Image 1 (cartoon, rainbow, N blue to C red):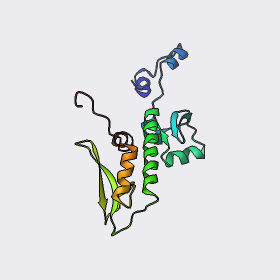
Image 2: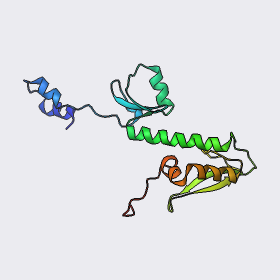
Image 3: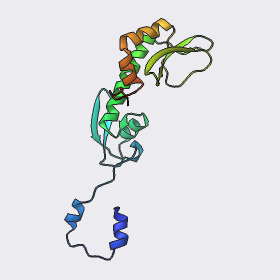
Image 4: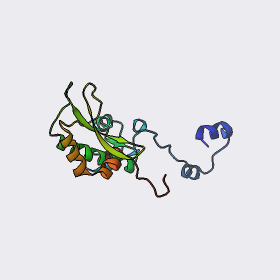
Length: 166
């Protein structure tokens, strides 16, 4: 029951043991990182994952949140850190290559139905967030070095199938 419902129903009652009531109250948890308030715990992704307490008046906290570095749970933060590490490796194998229109630009994609990583190319459309390679060979080398299982789990964030097929 929410406190405002209790106040509406029992607003005229006298409180005889305030400490007992305080002990049964639970502060609502933020639903997104944009709901964080001073004192709320959050997880920061940097070189690793750090648990911290939010402070509304710290400009750096706002910058971290706007930069996508703030998460509500350690699990979300760890998944993002793993994804960023794979992205860094992909960029390593891309050798600084940037998308060029009217040229074959190779990239990785996943077929969720068969849970596999494939290499394709695009000539006319640049997709946001993709790492592009100048050749199929560079893309293949990245897949080989990183491994399909790691790409699926950490980069594309597809959970491994359970034994019962779910």
